[in-house]
Structure formats: C-alpha cells, structure tokens
Amino acid sequence: MMKNLARHIYRRIRAQLLQRMIPKSHASLPTKMDELCIEVIGFFHSISGIGESARLCAQQLAADGYRVHCTSVETFFRKPKILPWDWPTPATHPGDTPAINCRIYHLNPPMLPPVILQMGITQFKQTYNIGYWAWELEAIPDEWINALRYMNAIITPSHFTTRVIQRYTDSPVLTATHPVTCGATSSDIRTRLNIPAQAFVVSSIFSFGSAMERKNPLGLIAAFKAALAHKPDAYLILKANAGGDSPEKKQLLDAIAGHPTILLIDQQWSHADILGLIQCSDLYASLHRSEGFGLTLAEAMLLHTPVLTTAWSGNMDFCNADNSFLVPSKPIAVNSSHPEFSDFEQATWADADISVATQWLTDIYQDRRLLAAKKSCCAQQMQACIDRHKYQHALQHLVNSQGNSL
Image (cartoon, rainbow, N blue to C red; front, side, top):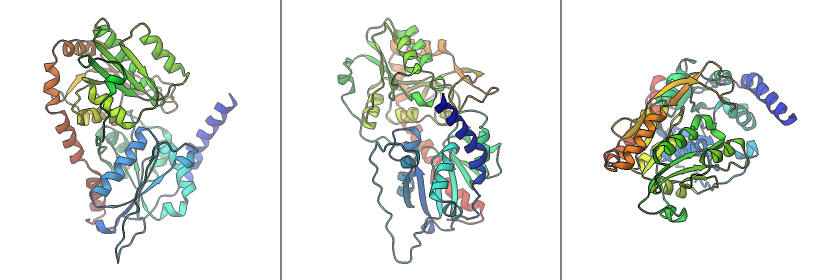
C-alpha cells in the first residue's frame, strides 16, 4: 500500500510540478538537410512498442541521409537493457557541423521530465525538440497538455492521434507512420508449438502492461470459441509478454480453460520468433478497443498475413475493406484500471462487434479463398502508407513552416 501511495504522489508531482519546470526551446531547425543532426531518444534496448518506434525512426532517418545519434534511456528508469543496440556514430566530413540541433523524443509525456532533467535543461534549450507520441483516446490527459507547452512540435504515428492532439495546441502536430520493416523470421514456429502444417491458425500479440481492456483478447477468445472451438484443426495463439501471476493472466487462463486449441504463450520471444508466428498464421487478429497505430497489424500486413481487426482508431490509416477483414464497433465508456486511462470517466473507445468477428472467422475457415484476396494487396498498401508519411516529409514541413527549405 505504501508503495502504491508513493507512486501516486510521484505521479502528481511529475504531472503538476516537474512538467512545468521545463522551458520551451527557441531554437529553429537548420535550413539545409546536411546541417541537420538529429538525436533520437528512446528505449532502444527494450522489447516494447515504444522501443521499436525509436529503433524504426533512427533507421529510417539514417536511410534517408540524415546524421542520427541514438540515446537509450533504460538507465534513467533503472530498467534492464534486454536487446542489443549498437548504433554507429555518424561520419563527419571537413566543414561539417556535427552538433546536435534536433531531438526526437520517442517517449510519451510521463517519461519526459526524468529524461530531460537528467540530460540537462541547458541541452534541452539548445535544440529543436519534437515529441513522438502515440495515444489511443479522443481526449488526452492533463499531463500531456502540460507537456505540450515545452515541445516545439509533435509527430504521431496516425492521423487519429494527430487530430486528437491538434485540438490542444497551436504548435505543429504532424503524422509520420511507423516505418515498419520485417527482418528475419523464424520458420519453425508451428513445429515448436506442435501445430500441424495444414491447421488453420489465428494469432494475436499483446502486452499485459498496455491495458488488457484496450487490447481486448477476451473479445477475440469469445469470437474464436463461438466460431471454431469445436474444430480440432483450428488454433488461436495468444502471444503476450510475461504475465507472471497477474490477475489479467489468470483471467485469460480461465477464459481458455478446457480449450486445448487456444494457447497462451507469455514467455519472452525474439523478434524473429514473433514475426515467425505472424508469418505462419493464416490470419492475424486484433479486436482492440483503440490503437494509436497498430504495430503488429502493420507487421502482419507486410508479411502478407491478412488481418481481422476493429475498424476504428489509428490502424484505419492503413486498414480498409480491400486489404483487411474489418469488424464494426460501437462506442463504450472507457473502463480500465490502467493508470493511463483510469481518470477518463467521460471518454469512450470502441467495442468490437463479436458476432461479426465470429461470422468472419467462420466464413474464412470454411473458404480460405477469402484470404487470398487480402494477401494480394495488404503488403503493397501497407508499404504505400509508410512511404506517404515519412519522417523526412514531416521534417520538410516543419522547416517550410519556418519559411525555410531543406
């Protein structure tokens, strides 16, 4: 109880005091690309969506010709460094000005004060500072509003999040789609899970720490049980991070008890294994209640695995009736004990229609030709979305808005 009280007090101090201690920089972006030196700040060594967003950002900016430095912040939060991340120092040439003049923080507002204050206010004031934020509701927390005061610009991964944040600030808010790429994939996942090669496999990936109510695996379990629980060659694979002895894990185990073809895997896997699971699946499913982007949905589409998903929020930048199996929804009140969402008594998110999801699963199982139509276009359309909304385009817009050009 004392630990929870201390955590609550710290959150209040951070939101109301520390956020207000950070001044806004008056630095501008340089006018030419070869003068721009960007530091990307995030959880580069962590297995998480926010860590992956930082890694993808650095890789795309470097590929587009920018000089990029990376600063990983696990030590700021006393977190372990799990993933290797070895980023080369950008090469310099005679006449270069290598000083960092732009920082992109792949950290949502609650994480910013500890990082900015430890790195130093003086450094913060010397650069143009961009927050890369993902959010899942149609209103943002008060702490986020306080943080908007000191960021020069905000970039988000979806038009959904961009439109929400634009309502709270006059600063630029732009969209840059996560530059999702698919690297090596493990090819033996079905064998390791003892799943026959010809079985029908639906997979879903989520984190217990991302508010299970938002990811809504219970809704997917209900739809799968209604459609396919009696089919011995139909499997639902739920891949989560380590759930330990959490109430959320117990709730899932209770929901799948007695159904041997519904598997919960909550051990740590490599990214290649996770991609391998998606790739060997016939269908990737997410009946989420809201997504700031939908990273695993994007990865599935790039791997030519069709997706079944809620037709609402960030993933609708790249999911449509041609490339995905869309599930309609109705708005319901946000009801979550997760600290990010617990104060939103009047907010709503989407409740996917389980009956429609059930019908889709039934139809797809009975007629696999339905998958072929989605496979034919999902990767191409996903890549087109990424190419249309690159970091390079957002930076160009920011420079142009200053009256300059790269």
